Image 1 (cartoon, one colour):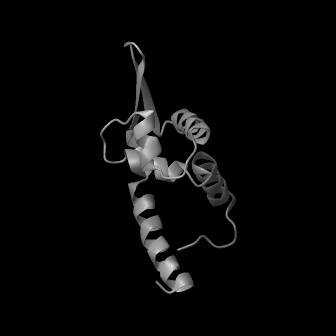
Image 2 (cartoon, rainbow, N blue to C red; image 1 turned 180 degrees about the vertical axis):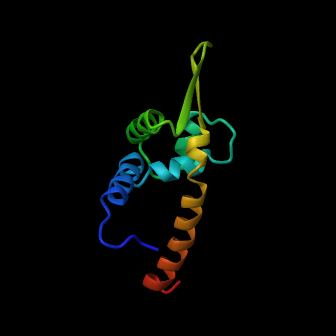
Length: 113
């Protein structure tokens, strides 16, 4: 149920969540990483259809700063970088599930399919 009356603490926590997850790509990146196996940049780029490399790089930095993903650089030549979702990122599983179900319902209501 939605909080009534615009409770300041609720508004602040929602704003914090929106700032950490803003944009159309971050949740899709987290979903791509949610199966648990580490992924390299190119693998994430293929999984998140339509994202540019520049945008993916920016979003990965933001997700790392918010402790939702971990970036690991291996001392190889050339250097290998892998990304994994953190336990904090995995805590969004219920949010992703609910967005999935809401999106299905929304698509049906708006588009009739």
